[in-house]
Amino acid sequence: MIKKTIKIPLFWKIYIIVVTIVLIGFVVLWSILWTALKKYEQSRPEYAMDKITEQIQLQDTGDFTKYVHTGENAYEGSEALDEAVREYIKNVLCEGAWAYTKKSGEYTNDNPVYQLKKDGQKTDIIIYLEKRSKNEWTIADVSGLSCEGKTYEIIVPENSEVTVDGNKLGSEYVTETKDAEVLSNVAKHINMPKTTTYHIENVYKEHEIKATGPVYNSELELISSTDNVYEFGFEANGKLIEEQESRIKEITEIYGKYVVNYESFAKLSPYILPGSYAYSYLSRISRTNIWLEVSREPAFSDMKVYNYQSYTKDCFSCEVSFDLQVSYNSGSFKDYPTHMEYIFVKRSGKWYIADMVMLK
Image (cartoon, rainbow, N blue to C red):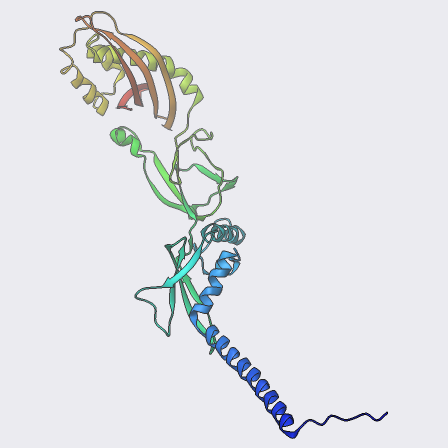
């Protein structure tokens, strides 16, 4: 059997060749255009910002740590600083809807500057871009990221030993030594004790701070710790407390009776240092309380003596709190909750009140 060969006309051969060439050309041209468009898109700073916000959205924020402003030398060392920065970035660039906008007043075509937005609100984070190559923008700098450590201020009696986590602080941390402010009214009667202030900068962790006093080598009580200011009181001498507590209560009862005109100043004055602020202050009360008429002896309840602080071997203070119940000739009865502080000074082996302060 003879097979017949189908001949394709020359026209159709040429047509197929031309169409094939055109299609190939179209594909090549489209590929060239697509590549050009892609390069153009990548050459725009918005492309880089889209990538950056996408990175933040995915919580891939490790690259931002190098732009965080920190204190130069962390007290705990570089490891603690690095950990603090990582935690800071994790908290600042946290989950949310991140976007960006041109930074008004700073953006130019040659130096694009963007402000990050989170959940529609502008943040303090500013991103500065620079051209790495003809078709690529990259981060030049980021502002608004700051992980500053705390500054600890530690106030102790002069010559006290201060330790942080058991490590003694050296004199390089001392910034100031001055007279103890609480004793300003008795300065002329004693050799003024001083307080020393330590500063520890760039602290990124919590620490145990302790102080040991210079007089009796006893652990000092932390009396205040607000806004990273740690203030330690002066020492308490157990023997002094034991010797003086009953006497202080006796003086306080005389004082309470005196202020309501039940006792005279002559009864109180032997316990007060002549020429002191306390003597001047208390002697004036006798001229202002004469109008009081008390029907019977005042009563005292809940009296407590506490917070002893030995500033020197010849000066100490303590706090006293009590309720004073007073009955007046008019038939009225009144209760006076009282909180006060005494400062005692020793003269010729005996303790005298040199100052007193009414506390809240």
